[in-house]
Length: 363
Picture 1 (cartoon, rainbow, N blue to C red):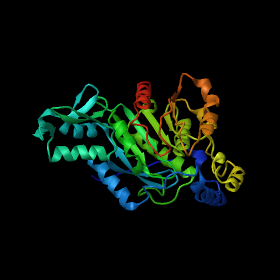
Picture 2 (cartoon, rainbow, N blue to C red):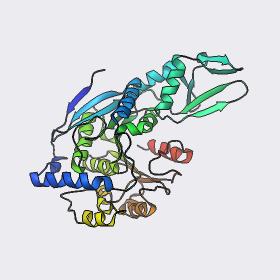
Picture 3 (cartoon, rainbow, N blue to C red):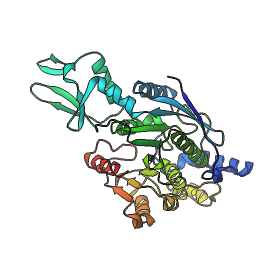
Picture 4 (cartoon, rainbow, N blue to C red):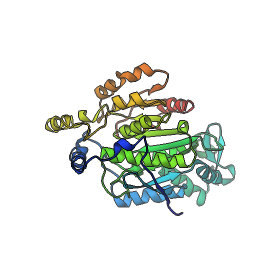
């Protein structure tokens, strides 16, 4: 399927992201290229391998993913992936039925092997393997007569809303297949943004360019007629700063902060000399302050964190929890801690997933 092209523009909400001088642009680029790899020491640098990116994108395409070429207001380009929930459902309904909170293989696609009913060899089995490759959580149920896989999800007819996802510093969108499958299984359209320099997107990233990348995705979604209150901006690690910025600029957009930090100048804390230099960088050079930005967000805020995060430690999270967010109890939710580290996704943990599913009903 041909790529979709969209060009964003400057407007009253993003105009302050314009580069004011060549010197500022150079300093900003230098800061991000030098200190970016030191932000939260231990972050993964996987999925920058072109071969892995290509494999992931081909898998995305099998589930209806379409390349979305977004030209931001400053002229920068991202090559992202867009999914439509209704197309995903059509693919699912070819092989699966929805029963009691799970998508399971159609009864007609079982065959008797080794004394049990199992998935037929061929297209049905290949589809299940692809769904697992998409990192879709599943349960294996086996008894004396049958062996089946069940995929938790919801039964929807039309799209429930739009998700815009921003990845972390160490990996592009291809490393977050589970994010796409989680939302698609619950009826949400999804845009997996590959920021500049990640995936197949050309160029290099700064904090400002990443904000403009997400704003371009937002403007595209707006052009499709999706109202702000149906948009969820989901960010992981440093991506939490970019989605928070988007929600602060665009009224009523909801935000999911997946293992967020407090402020960029607290980064590099594992390297004292680097942190000393980072701390003196003015906001005109780097502006990634979740605590301040979230004060401007008018949509709902969901914070997901792990007590066992080896990159963003509990002290960092507590500083965010102790901020003014707590004064907005009606619109801010903190998901219970899950028992995985920074680079693990939480979709297989029932307590966390149940709590997040409940939040989705409030968006």
